[in-house]
Amino acid sequence: MKNYIIILAAGKGNRLGAEMAKQFLPLNGKPILMHTIDKFINNLDHNFEIILVLNKDDIQIWKSFCELFNYDHSFRIVIGGKERFHSVKNALDTIEDPHCYIGIHDAVRPFVSKKVINTAFTEIREHDAVVPSISMIPTIRRINEKGNIGVNRDEFKVIQTPQVFRSDVIKKAYETSYQSHFFDDATVAEYSGYTIKLIEGNEENIKITLPIDYITAKALRTKTPEYDIPH
Image (cartoon, rainbow, N blue to C red; front, side):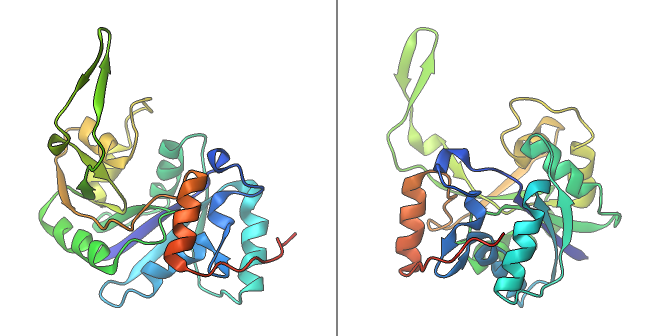
């Protein structure tokens, strides 16, 4: 069956405190978003049709970057919504194929490994949904009305993307109304009664959200030349 990957790049990234949306910040000489896309374009084990979800105000800057870097790949561009939920739904609504596999990935996770991508899109043949995860390293406590209590971190996992679904599963799940507790696509599918299969993620697959994450990303890439922002 055909493989789609929805790359969510409509966020503003206010928590990073940068002048532009975090997905356009330079990483080893080109925008973070391009590094992320390349992980799927250059994957020879699975062929992907890429759906790129952008904020309507960022379409021109994306086109300018494509011209700047001679980036001539073909994408289906979709306008993002108010919340992540609405951005995903907008992208799903453009997929008419009733029998396909759909992955959903954060634009600011440029270090996802080929192994994780391929495992997710292989395992989905046997499951409703496949989600990469890694073990939790920090000591954690649960906050409740009485204060807080220590919990066993071995009972928790840190969730990553791409989260991969059968098309019938994720489309059905997104027929529900938005809920504030929909933190990712797996929680939407779970809310609709589907089972989530966890697979092993990769430690480097960080989501660049805070300034420290950007510092870490630059360290992982070692060189991050600046460039002029297109207008």
